[in-house]
Image (cartoon, rainbow, N blue to C red; front, side, top):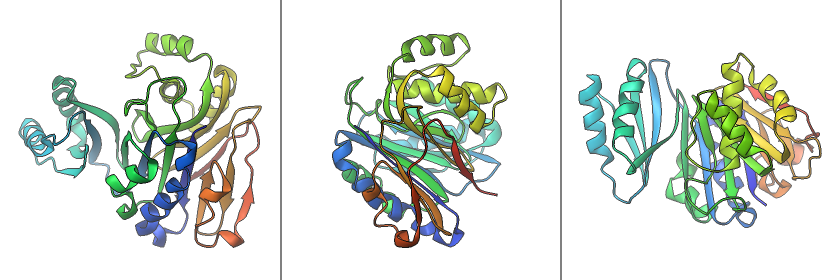
Length: 299
C-alpha cells in the first residue's frame, strides 16, 4: 500500500509554488507509505548542460571537493547544489560521460540516481513529510513533479529501494503495486544492455519503458506495450522532461484519482492528497480508467 502524487502545472505563474503544493500532497500520504519517500522535480535547465543527481551513502560527504575534481576533469566549472545527502551537479552536455566515469570510480560512497536537462531526484528512508522537509521540497520551483511514499513489500527498507527510479535521461517512474514477472523481464533487459542497481520490481518497470523508448516508441506507446509485457497489478506515474503520464493495469485494483483545472493537472492515490490544492472545489475530478494511458505535456 504505497502512495503516489503528481502535479503538472499548466499555469506558468504557479511554477514558484510547485514544491509547496507537492509537499502538502506528499505529507497526506504518510500512512500509505511510512518507511521511505522520494520525489522528482522538473525545474530550470538548458540544452547545454546535464544535471546529475548524486546520492551520498554516508553523512557529511564532501560534494564540494567532488565538484572541484569534476571541474578540473572537464575543463570548466561544474557547480553543485547540495541538499543533505544529495548533490545536483551541472555538467556541460559533452562532458557527461567523463563526469559519470569519475563518479562511478569513487565506488560505493556515492551513486548517480538520475540525470536530465531539468530533472532532479531526491529520496531517503523516513517518514515522507520528514523527507520532504529534509530536502526543502517546499522551496523548489518547476513545471511538474511526481512523488512516492513507500510501504516495502517485495524488498528491504533502504534508500536504494525508494522511488522514483530513473533509467533514462529526464525519465523517472513511481509505482503502487507489484509485478510478478520482474525477474524474467530484468534478465531480458540486461541482455539488451540495461543495468540495474537493485532487486526492486519498480526499477525493472522504469528500465522497460526506457528500453521501449530507445527502440523508437513514444512514451504513450511504451506504456501501451507494458500492458502486454508486465504481469501484476500496478498504477504507474511517469515523469519526462515535458510532462507526466499515468497508467493503471487492466484490473485497476490500486486506488487513483485525478483532478484538472485551468491551472494544473494533479494525481493522487486518494482524493485527500488533492484536497488542499487551490481551486480544487471547481476541478474536474475523475478516476483514471483501467488500461488507459493518460499524458500531459508542455507545448
